Image (cartoon, one colour):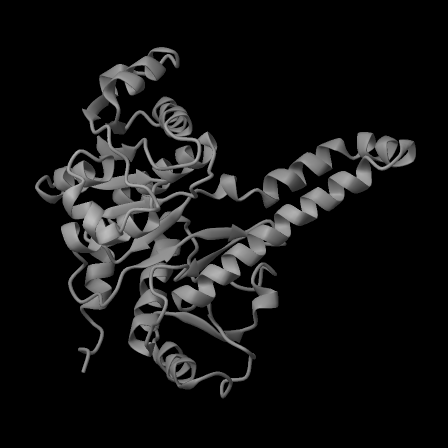
Length: 338
């Protein structure tokens, strides 16, 4: 039985979507136990309405929320009745509690993960790694997507190693195609960090490194993993998500413009719905904080119940496949940081 902590506070639609998504995951995965953190009375009331398998549920009363307005490091130290504080405290001293799903404050999640739980030995900085849909009906991972605004070549190499293993072990991609986000595809392009990183990735025989890539090819389907610093990765993810959402709005406006387009939409309804589901980031779970001593999954603040379900399944697959141990082993073979 894999035990997963679910933070029910902090998101735009919390606690409803967190609880609903967790119950969906419980019903589909008999090997999961959920530990809810939040307002006990609210959680209990909502669970009673969802036909939840209560024998695999535990509730921890933690009524306070760490908001995006709180200073992350102060909040994670002093807001002792908050759901995130209690989650990290529980995980620190219990080897059976190794996974947390939250769509709360990103800063507090990073601060708690690093300060309270620590990193895998040898990891310089943990990195967020979400996945996005691609035009060939596949997906591509982005690492890092916001945990580290400034990175050196050693960190980017570690991101590649961690995310490569993540895709291999949890998505069954045997040889992920790894690309380095850059301003051009030629090996000599980019700043000193990108040039040095290119050499490191090209020399690493454990990686299927295919070279530099430009942002316009992010969802082309040519790549399985994009390696980048957190600043560029965050901009890339949000630009793609925003473009997909605007494209859906444009399609809707086009198909509802007049009687002729409405008739066309009627014949294409199934295809349109498939396209909508394919482009909806809620169907792809959250970002994994790779390199942390425990499994941390961060969902969008505005995510839906289905996203929380997918986040829990991500955590389950990571734990089932012992990803953290594999990362520990792989990083131990890297040259020591000078």
